[in-house]
Image (cartoon, rainbow, N blue to C red):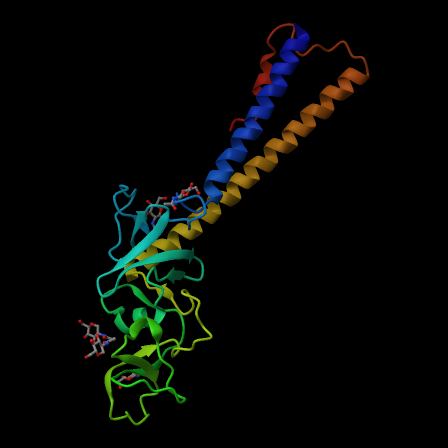
Length: 261
Ligand SMILES: *[C@@H]1O[C@H](CO)[C@@H](O)[C@H](O)[C@H]1NC(C)=O
Ligand SMILES: *[C@@H]1O[C@H](CO)[C@@H](O)[C@H](O)[C@H]1NC(C)=O
Ligand SMILES: *[C@@H]1O[C@H](CO)[C@@H](O)[C@H](O)[C@H]1NC(C)=O
Ligand SMILES: *[C@@H]1O[C@H](CO)[C@@H](O)[C@H](O)[C@H]1NC(C)=O
Ligand SMILES: *[C@@H]1O[C@H](CO)[C@@H](O)[C@H](O)[C@H]1NC(C)=O
């Protein structure tokens, strides 16, 4: 009977510590987070998945879609881009073009009226559409925008436009086309701005969360110390062969001495 009550006491202490750690873990993960697939990016504020009822009001422009296993974002000026990763602390969203044409994205993507900007410093380049193929530098054809009768090049805006070409757009892009850069994600990184009121709320939330985490950690430490002391006391009692019995009948003093968490 005594042994039973003693074990019960230990189990109670264990549960108490366990529960406190769970509480702490819950608070230390900044907010609820979801994913489109196992390896996909974590999606949480300010982003949300379309169709999944968001816990808090959704911000325009931060809507993501799950298409099969892919996390995608839709831009009216271009279409869907695949979200490769989201880094919340540096506010960087890395995208992939499913059509594998980064310079087609640069040409068409218009980030006005979206919360996004390119993550990188931009430089103006002119897109040329030429009826003849030019193969001397600085003319390097962008294969994914060219056809048999039209050859597209990205050149410095200062450059004299050859007669067979039409400079159809000058736009700020991270870099001009190079055949050596065939990565379909290079340069496709954006950063975002939140509306001013959201910025303030987020700052307040972060402070509150770190306070909660600190107090929970403190609570956990106290619990562990109490558990350790209880263990030591009980061992001492056992070793010294004391006749003190922790469970012949319910000891109100012992129960009261447990931390009230
Ligand atoms: C989605 O991911 C699962 C597990 O990784 C895989 O079995 C499945 O084939 C994937 N589906 C598509 C459409 O990629
Ligand atoms: C983006 O769209 C806006 C409004 O439609 C327009 O004023 C602006 O020139 C466009 N920007 C680019 C880079 O095409
Ligand atoms: C690109 O050209 C436009 C219009 O000439 C100019 O306003 C803008 O500052 C230029 N951007 C860069 C990155 O040089
Ligand atoms: C280049 O010009 C051709 C012929 O006018 C046109 O069919 C093609 O769509 C143009 N390419 C781009 C990328 O605008
Ligand atoms: C702040 O936290 C609350 C509750 O945890 C949440 O509902 C709200 O959306 C958060 N706001 C921001 C801006 O993160």
